[in-house]
Length: 454
Image 1 (cartoon, rainbow, N blue to C red):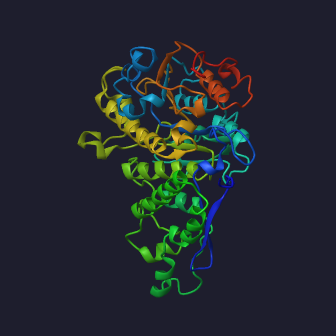
Image 2 (cartoon, rainbow, N blue to C red; image 1 turned 90 degrees about the vertical axis):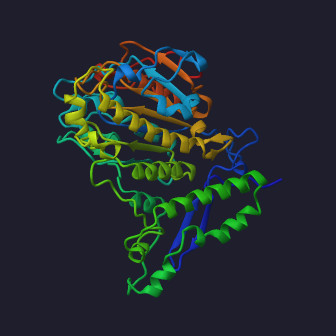
Image 3 (cartoon, rainbow, N blue to C red; image 1 turned 120 degrees about the vertical axis):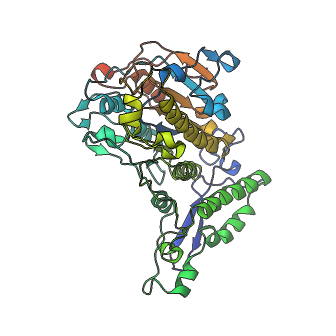
């Protein structure tokens, strides 16, 4: 019988620069009790991991909302949710909600605040912490990062409101701004690397530095394998290969030597500079966020695919998409809430990008299941139908099983109910001990019935 392994075990190595490299481990069977529900050393129950996944500019409600409610075969994915077919069993679709805090003339900033804080704005600032930070207050103790915030495209509107530039807030005037550069995210996750002193451009010195993070910790990894069972050995190998794959995909091509001095594997996939939300940036951020959760670097993440009212240009989706998605495509294209073809193209692309992230979680082993089994991913936007800023039929998805607190594969309809009730439902799923969420018209004191534990 193997001795239980501490949850915070790290693989360590020394780089040629003398700096220490560390790589976190996935949750292994050796860290858990026999049922896989608690830590072996302490008996502490494992809380669900949490992600807010946000996209700007809403949907086409007539194509987004499923036709029927129920669970399993009783409901089917709508047209705009079809890209999520790979994870239908892990989806809980919430329809009918209304963003009651939306203010005319400030639809996007107040909509964003409503969807993530349940509170109106006070001038340009939010009035309350966002739901991800409430979760972090509860479950992040001991994690290297209290929360991480990443984004795919920095495309934004011209507004000063805090709620237009991030959806993660510690409180009033306390924004958690997203990082849009995968290179910086990778460096942050694998900190502690230093450039060699002097002669930074020396070929021989740079060649010594340009080693994989994994190469520097393989010896420690081999020692650990001797303590692991067959399943954990395979899981460790898969985990290390996933990190190596990210390194290979993000490897610097323009100036490999210089870049290798600053991070262990200098990525060539940088921040989106054309307001396009390109697929390669989404893929990198999806993998890095999953890696951060799997490595126990954090238990709370906010993934901003696009910001509220984002002036994005989805040129890569076709010649007819070379226009401002917010100003032109959403607001001026003819049609109704079930018939704006270019809007539909953008929403479907967004859902494909969400699916990529969710599939990555589903394919990553974690405890006695997958990361998606262990997580609650709250998916929402800053408006319902962008053309007229309709606040009815607000898009809300719960993805994941939250360690059994959500059944998944369900659609629930709550016509006219306050959007804030979704936030309170998140709080109850995460067992935050809150009786209410929100302020003024956004205050909610009751969860959405039939969602938790069904």
